[in-house]
Image (cartoon, rainbow, N blue to C red):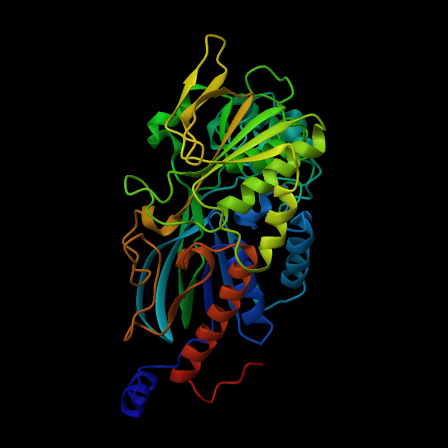
Length: 438
């Protein structure tokens, strides 16, 4: 930016020093705390009731197989201890106009029906007799209509399902709260913000498995996706951490993991999502830990274990009960009792196979959430796949963090978010070079 243009913008009014982060997953959280700890005011928006995004729903990370609550809790403490960060959940950007140092943002919030007085005591949940599908467990179980999003939710505040508003059950929920935290009259609100820079950390969603018709995802409960497998293995999941067949509740000891389900396929997602191979290996470890006599087949095109993660691949492949099958399965049939049967050809041996399994897990790829955003908000340039990518001459006040900019694992998302925080700070300083960071 030339000096004359910079002065022209400054003459229009004082530049905002506030950074808006859209998306409260691991990338958004990281960008927010990194920017705030340099002294900048940060507003962190999240569309769901709690922070954490996809990472919060994972059972464990690879390669060390530690629980993600550890890393998340450290960041939640950083948020709690930093008054420069304002967290707004159940919120989304409706419109955005302006330029670096002077963005006008319209934000809409959905009602939670529970205010800041909530102590997370759980009395409201005990009072409710209505059950609703549990979004955290991808609908594999149900929860009370008054529920805590999950045990490590931040903020620790209950939510009331909109389905019961106006019903006698909602009145029971309100009457059970001894703190005056239930507000059944809460409505959508729209408010405006002025910010100096915007970081898009809108994350990803799994590719729609029902579109891969040969794999019969919607025809059998014993065919699940990789995110559902994470919840199935989690102690707070629908089965209390037991990997069981959803159809009958019996142990899943014969398990198939299909790589590149809808990925690297011009009919679906033409790109590699980077994490799927390692995630499936992690799932194989989950099964082996629970069932010493389990047998797992991993169907793959190529194994992609980048950098130091090669050691994790070597560890898993050394297990004689985990079998790697170089093949792209053609289709999945169902036996008379509903057992899924994977059919295809082994690329190496040329064997034509038809193998039954207790459980089939589809390793779905990452689709950018920004691709399906139905608002008119301009997040920046997109590549052919819908990821946000910077181009020469782009507005410097907007940047992407984490998977909104391309497929990344958790550690890479954290690095990307730190870089995005730096870009946002640099952008603000171009229009307000003498500003203090506090």
